[in-house]
Length: 303
Image (cartoon, rainbow, N blue to C red):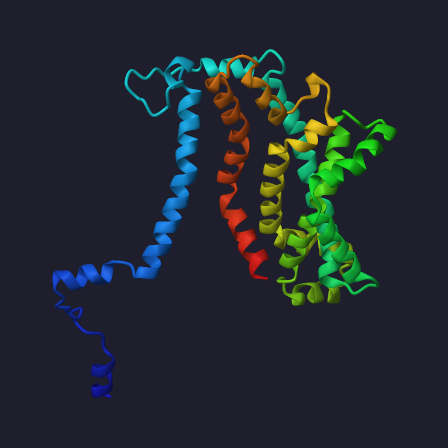
């Protein structure tokens, strides 16, 4: 017994590794394939970050300083005049258009999340006639170009009195986004264990109770991912507002950015400030919900 205790006892000191400096450096360096992946990732990050830095610098500097390049930092002047000019733009102030964009975006996201979850759940759990055919139609609609959707909806909105209204634009965004949301949430729900729902059915829970108390809470990461992606797409959408919104008081932020160029001279500082104001909201939303967004994306793609 004493010999067994001696063999099982931990050593009094940690094992010593007599490695020379070159060997330690070689072990610390990444392998060639990993170094190549790092180089590609860093290169892509630089390609995205450098234009953004230029846009940000141009938004805080007067036109006389950035006309020859934003990278000239000598005698740099920082000012908020471009942002005040964008917020009070004569044709359509950004302060109003940002509110208009939120009025369209928030309902478009909430309705798509709710309807998408309600449609995806039967596709993931039930067997019914024409299930594969209906799902294939959803995939086809999702792959259709937005120009095709606009052609079909233009006359419909005209006839129903919803043209040039927030409600009409919201319905177009909901119909356009429902296909990919159903596909995304269906893939996520297929990964949820059936045992949870079976246990609830044994306890007497109805399908509605199972959906409300089990499916929706467990689908929170996927719903957050849907919300972030749909919010970004609707917030930055240019084509649908350009086709269906004509009143200047109803303009959305992406519609106003091309108007800031002017006819005789492009005020790049004004355009840059308007672009920063437009992209700030979805970027902040992604930063706040990044952890849940990543979890939902990984689970949906893996399943």
